[in-house]
Amino acid sequence: MILESSILGQLEYDEEKIITFPQGIIAFEQYKRYLLVENQDQHNPLWWLQSVDEPDLLFTVINPFVIKPDYNFELAPGDVEDLGIEKREDLVVLSIVVVPEDFKKMTANLLAPVVINARLKKGKQIILQDKNYSPKHLIIEELQQRSSGQQARPSKTPSSRQGTQTGPSKEECCHVGADPKKR
Amino acid sequence: MLVLTRKKDESIMLGEEIEIVVLEISANQVRLGVKAPRDCAVYRKEIFTLIREENIKAARQHGQVDALQAEIKQLFTPEGPSK
Image (cartoon, rainbow over all chains, first blue to last red; front, side):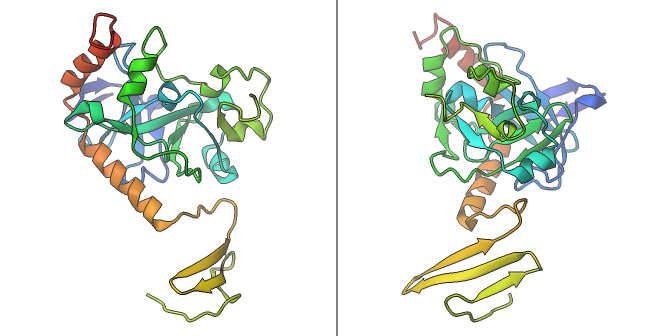
């Protein structure tokens, strides 16, 4: 299939790659189908969520663990259920990025991550109850600090990267990111 | 909009499952308790509004994708200004 994105140009994709957001993205509830577009440049951590149904609708996204390695939150049982998440490996977490004219001021929304079940190709934007995370988190400096030699690509299993290698139990799959119990 | 008057400790029901209780009233503040099913998300409206606004901004502002690619690349390469 071919999609003509207003911003990214022509995108070729398989039907099975389409990620469905049953509730849409907040403020864009009517658009339910997106493609996660990888960056051609492996070292560039910015990816995109392109609406399949609206060529003009595109979100720049980033793996929040690249900018904040200790990023973590609890997925509400309702969200786990909505997304049909059975194990942590199913999860892809993304933050939506605003890229202003002065790109050095670009910000990531850490308060309302996009959570995707990669297995079922189902996604949802959730709002965290955690007040410590900003919806306008400045990211360039952090990217610069972490750029040296680090993998910048969004990780499919951000939580397992944090070193928690034990098999996830049912409850554990609700926790995303570094385990707060591990010090 | 439906307007109801409630006293402290009184509540209203939204449907059969969601209850909002008035816990405390002071001069310019009310403390509310919300009893809702686990799958029902409860937020302060200003948070929700803020997320909406950020999403709308994000959908409009991706930078010049090509230029941004180059800029970011520069930041990430050792010869770049980030050295």
